[in-house]
Length: 118
Image 1 (cartoon, rainbow, N blue to C red):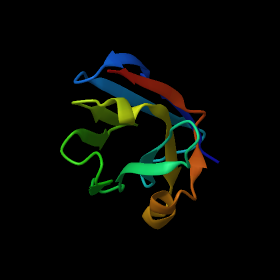
Image 2 (image 1 turned 135 degrees about the horizontal axis):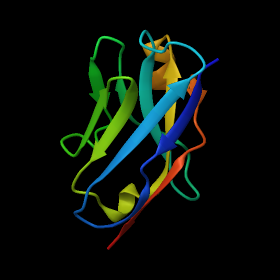
Image 3 (image 1 turned 90 degrees about the vertical axis):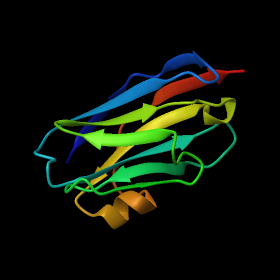
């Protein structure tokens, strides 16, 4: 079982940047795929970005060109050119299977709030 803890959320103006971090503990996760999802009030949780153990990345169309996912001993989400519609609770996820990460079937953190003001 992987325990995931997100950090780095906060309040930012539109056009600004934030960097989210997700630390994992409980076992070695270097061979895990990792990802970020988000959930806005009244909406379903949606995929944002993912990264395989080998560093291959993929993104939701809504964040391509603005967000960058990366990893070392943790996984990060650099969010640039933020928009009010990016406001949500952001969740980190992990699983040995990149397919499960893509589909939201991995382990979850508790989430971190990101609020973008207009």
